[in-house]
Amino acid sequence: MNLYRDIIISHYKHPKNRGKLEHFTHSAFKANPTCGDEIEMQILLENDQISDIKFHGKGCAISQAACSLMTDYLIGEPVSTAKELTYQDIVEMLGGGPISPARVKCAKLGLDVLSAALK
Image 1 (cartoon, one colour):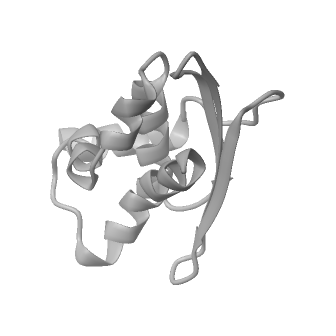
Image 2 (spheres, helix red, strand yellow; image 1 turned 90 degrees about the horizontal axis):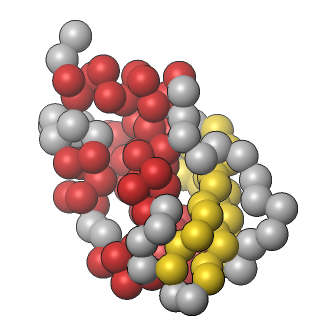
């Protein structure tokens, strides 16, 4: 196995920040109808900082691993950091390996949900 695949499989099997928050200030839900991935994200902002973030839903290994890595990175970060995240940042979190054109929407879904929640 290569690093790219190992990271995805690890975060898919053992996702971080998976679940629901009892108290949150922001949330959003999005689905990718072409593949069936669905993600709901809940965020607790305190003093313009992400003090907690959780996601739940269903999806392929790439969409779930991307959410796990992204949410883990964002805890404790200012909202500005979350708003500046790009698709390329997500690709780097996933190990920097190539993502096929059919899987770009999968890798980007969590970022899209994050953006919707913070609007």
